[in-house]
Amino acid sequence: MTQSVLERLLQVSRGMEIWWDSSPLVFNSFVRRMLEPALEPDREELAEQLTRILVLGDPVKSLVRGCTTNPPLALTAVKDDPPQWNAWVDGLIESQPGLSDSDYAWLTYKEVLRRGAEIMLPIWEASAGRFGYISGQLDPRLLTEVEPMVAMAEELRAISPNVMIKVPASTQGVDVVRTLTGMGIPTNVTTCFTLPQIWAVANAAKEGLALAEAKRVDMSKWRAVITMMIGRLTEHPILDEQAARRGISLSRTDKHWFGIYVFRKAFRLLTDNGMPSKMLACSMRVGPIVAGQHRFWDVEKIAGDIVYTMPPYVLEPLFTRCRDLEFREEIFSDDVPEDVLYKLSKIPYVLQSWDPNGMDIDQFNGHPATVSTAQAFASAFDGLEAYVGKRRVLVKQRSRRYRSRALAAQT
Image (tube, rainbow, N blue to C red; front, top):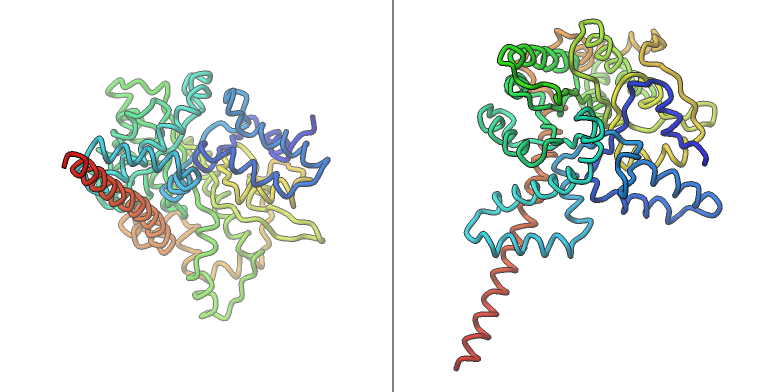
């Protein structure tokens, strides 16, 4: 058995975790897509390595320790198996007539989450609640509404004990993290890009933990992670716009260093202050090419006691272009070139991101990456509503045809 690139990565730190960034329901489809272009004998070895990532027949043997989902990924899961989901949604509409498209979409989202949680539950049980969580995201259209978010979190949490609530790093989301932690509900903070956001939600989790302990809430199966969306920070158009206005040109390599630097600072800030939350890296982008070799700095240069959540678009280059990479602990490294830091330090968007005091909490909702990402997530919920809306029309038409045939038979 040949070690995969992920297995070599995991050797860097005993505390490192790799999570699957999509619904477990689509994992087999991902494996099939990866294997289709592969040639023998590489195909057999690749198949063996990929199926070790998530062992659906015995999840406890999986490399992954958790799973993250979001509205776009839930919609992808539905579209991955139209016959099954069409039948399920049609049955839902027939059994609960009169609901709105929003209601049907929310119930469908919960069902995608429930099925994924069921797959991951053996990992949660075997680890006494340490691993095996699946993140269920709150409706991003409510990111400014504290009470509705808390109520929705309780609803999602009731699905399964291994559901972790994905809370936005919005101004109001900070309060939600504190409240949910005080109730013993695990959290994964999302739409999070900057040190001010990370520091605020880390403190909220710490404060919530103190509240829970004062109320003697059972916290034995609680944990918190903070997701930094690296690529969504470094690829936002405003970065280039502000740089250009100052006569600065940023290369793709410069932008990799930007994301790496912010993530490392966040990790050290939480570690040095003994915060209970763990840093989670997502939205990682492949590159750069160094001396003719494909690298994956967004993975390599933050390797350490962290969580990576990896979607197909990260795993594909890791297992093809970057499969020979070797890893070492680099989360504590200080190798960002001085000239890159100097250029970056002239850009307001960057300063907001890497200074813990770069934004006040009431500025979080207006951060460009927060705005664009929340809009993308909300659009996915709109897409799910559009899907169930089409099914509702079809069910109604089918019902009319059935009644017409029944009436004709009677006459």
